[in-house]
Structure formats: structure tokens, C-alpha cells
Length: 158
Image (cartoon, rainbow, N blue to C red; front, top):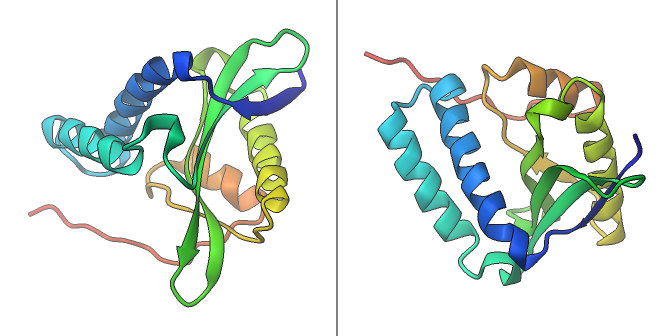
């Protein structure tokens, strides 16, 4: 299946945002050493603060990942254009998500390559992202695409 990115439509936003909050909270529980209640509060807070104007939030790009052949939405990509201190403009990837029933088929890789095209078209030459240390599947994908770790956050629960 060949994939493409297109802007998420306003009528898709609420379902996308709710699913994203659930996924993000679960990721924080599974890989970020957070208790569920705290993770859910953080997911709500982060969503409200990063997309205060929903899809009209300046500098934010929320894109549907869909099949060219059928138009079926199989995932999404969310990134921001931002100014990196001392380094200039860059894209910051908030999430790349592939629906569970479509995982394991190379769609995450296709999504990342399509993201690179989008970012280049905006005149940016760098993508930065954050990934939880325990998320080996994502870390492996990013490494295979040439991403390198630039910082490591460590935690010890007492």
C-alpha cells in the first residue's frame, strides 16, 4: 500500500485528539515511569497547551496518513515548525502514529519519509523528536532512518 500525507480535517480533529491523548498517556505509563492518573493529567495539559487553536494553531501541522489507493486513514503525523535556540528553524515531531491493525507493514517508515518531504518543502533541514527510552520499536525505526540520540533523560524511582 502506498501512503500519502494530507492535512487533517476539522471534522476529524476531536477523534484524533482523543486517541492521541489516550496513546500519549499510555506511552507515559508504559515507557515514561508515570502513574496512570498523572499521565492522563499531563496528556490533557500538553494537548491543550500545544494546540490551543486546534488545527489553526500557528506553526502546527497535523496530517492524516492515508492509503493512496483507497483513501483509508491508517495513521497520523503531527509536527511543529519552531525556532531552536542557537540552531535556527527546525521541525519538531510530536507524534507519528500508525493504527494498530496496520502496524508491522512498514507504514511507520513510510510516514517518516513522507514527513521528511513535508519538512524539506517548508525550507527546514532538521527534524528533532523525543522518544521514551523503553520504546525500542520507535527508537529502532528512528535509528534506521539516520536519527542519533542527542540527549538522554534518566530517572530513578525511590
